[in-house]
Length: 183
Image: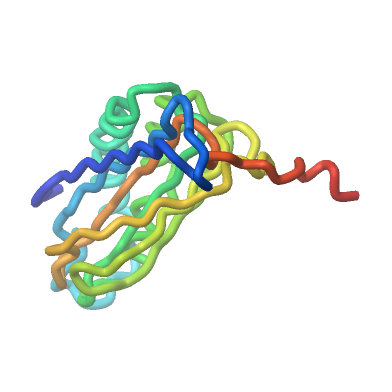
């Protein structure tokens, strides 16, 4: 696995809807910009050898970093794969939609639910939103949220941006009724 760089973002919301958020609502994102392991090979029928080699390394690299950047227990989480223009969406999907990647984050976050994801092919500098859901119950509406991310110089045509996002809470000032109330 060839990593060009790792980027860490944190966001602390202090006010929402004109009201203070106390404690501030923190979200963290960690992104690895890697060389696409299938770059320059044309159509590759069997992606599994590349997935087996790269996905566990990415999970092991990113999961502890995003938990550390958050600095609090993870309540909501999500993932992303943005593939450069010379790659296929399947390249990013293969790396993030495997337990060999996601289980590192699930264990680090004490989570049991599937990680929501964004995946797309895009040019460098594309804005994308990483969806987040509650770590143990995907029906908890207060934790359905997203965080906007952009890497100005990535992914390059032969790269993939792989990311994990975590929130220490639900949306600031969340006040929707529980899903169970809609019968």
